[in-house]
Each structure stands twice: as structure tokens, then as C-alpha cells.
Picture 1 (tube, rainbow, N blue to C red):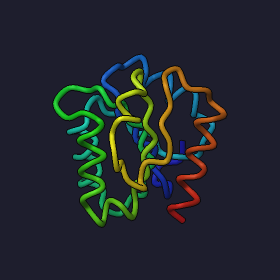
Picture 2 (cartoon, one colour):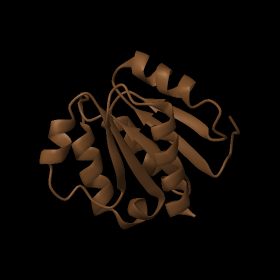
Picture 3 (cartoon, rainbow, N blue to C red):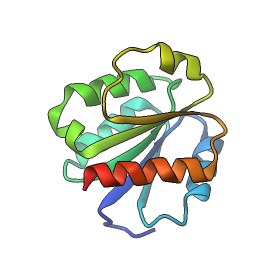
Length: 131
């Protein structure tokens, strides 16, 4: 991990084990890692770090504020749209595909468990879009 790196990988999942697995899986990436347990904390991080480019690994089913609400808030905020890319990782893909207009900020949607190679490809796509 390189602190102060250009990109932050924000893991938003209410399951601590999932957060630990994702962080361990992606530890080879030279990014700053931040983990939060719900959408409200994810949005708080985004607003408190207005200059940070963020790739968010987002679970949909979380307490307080779910992933769909986070996606909607990012889509409504022009500053966030320019610096945030979202990769949905969820146990329930059906809810993603039934959701219309999830926006250009959502790079991809994966069902848990996700393969490391596929996830790294999606993260690299997000980085290339944010450059």
C-alpha cells in the first residue's frame, strides 16, 4: 500500500470477512485501501476527500444506506461522477440487472465470490477512465 497514492480503493461491504478477503486479494495493487461497513460511511469518505480519485467496490445489501442509494447519489453529483468509479460486488446480481439507468460510473457487476483476475481488470479499467 502506498499512502497518499493517486487512487483509493474504497471497499464498502457490511460483512467484515468480505472486506478482509477483498483487501487481501488485492494487496498487490499500489493503492490506498479504505474499508467501510455501509453506504453512509462510503459517502462520508467521498465527501471528506474531495480531491481523491476512488475505485469503489460496492456491496448492494447494506444497512443505513444500501449500494443502490450510493450509486444514485454519485450519479447526481457532478464532482463525484468525475472522480469515482464503482464496481458492484453482490450476492444478488438480479437486483443489479433489474435496476435501470445505473449510470456510467458503474464499471461492472460481479456476483460473490469474485475472481481476482476479473476484479483487477475492472479496477484497471476504472483507473484508465479516471486518468
